[in-house]
Image 1 (cartoon, rainbow, N blue to C red):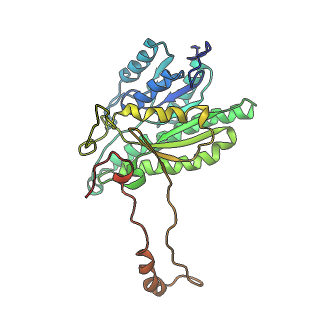
Image 2: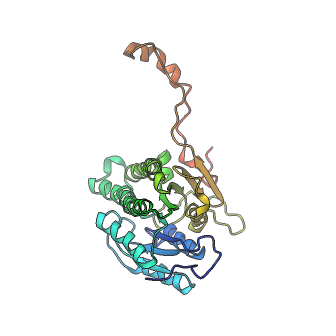
Image 3: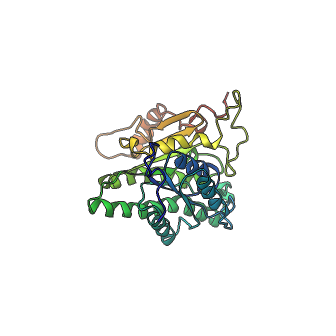
Length: 316
């Protein structure tokens, strides 16, 4: 069993904590893995190593990040399991426990893109995107949650964290991403429900909706201005907040989704009920037709994904 990073008495904020980062071989996930390690955590870097559309596989990306962490004096191992597979998720959790003795933090970051408009999207495009994002988040959270439940029932104190990855596309909608947006919206709802169910075991569950330049994101039109070298869409700017969510300091925060980009963290407040029609007794077509249009006129427009952070394109 490998020794946990920070076990020799380091005062790093994540000293002694063990973290699994899925999709940790590239992009935002890579930055998460490095940031956790540099904060003192031991890290299992998971990545199937496929292309951006989910095809193919390679052990290279995860191995490269784990090797970089070790070269900096940290503790890390690589994992190439498919997180959407029940057995693969279980193996990943078991590897973390086997290598480092326990598990404290799960960062569900793995994902692929297959953007097409609804009428041109194949069932394979739909199924694969939903499988990796939504099923993968479920499979990993269930596997880790069962470990924490067993610890809690055995009397071991648990201060565990799950950080899921949603998206502005899932929260607010984005043209050409019906599959991706549906999966990411599902992750937001899953986060709220998982937080309710896992609280009794000492687990918090939150999600981020990050904005960053990676191989999976189309960045045209996103960064309009860069001030003195600060690139707000660089993926490393997302990770400090994720590390904080993975720390013991975030115990009071659970069941929430946050927009994170550059120097910005915004709290997504979710669905709420605006103006409403209420009649005495049951609704009728005639009552709706007569009264609902005036109610609907008072409703706010759907929130735009372009307004979810301060670095998006300015709209006239």
